[in-house]
Picture 1 (cartoon, rainbow, N blue to C red):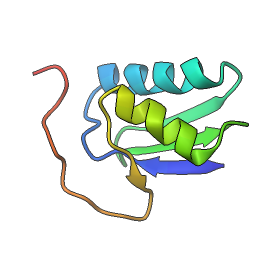
Picture 2 (picture 1 turned 120 degrees about the horizontal axis):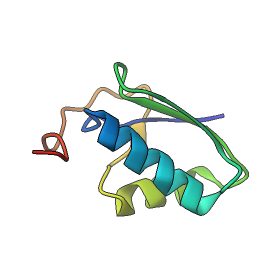
Picture 3 (picture 1 turned 135 degrees about the vertical axis):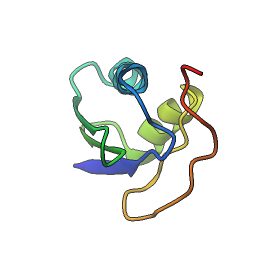
Picture 4 (picture 1 turned 180 degrees about the vertical axis):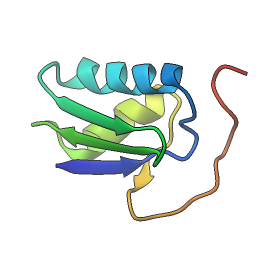
Length: 78
């Protein structure tokens, strides 16, 4: 299981965009997003770096799940 923290994730649209970005890399990936904790857990054959790059390309900067970073921007819907 690969876990990311995504501090700027703040709404259902973000959850959908993140899930879609992961599924574009690995259609069979299991994606568990916890919006309240700003955590994404992925079970996938793709590596951490590949998944992190997909999230970055979607506009979300993943950090190590144990890190607590301040959001770099507001909600994507604003």
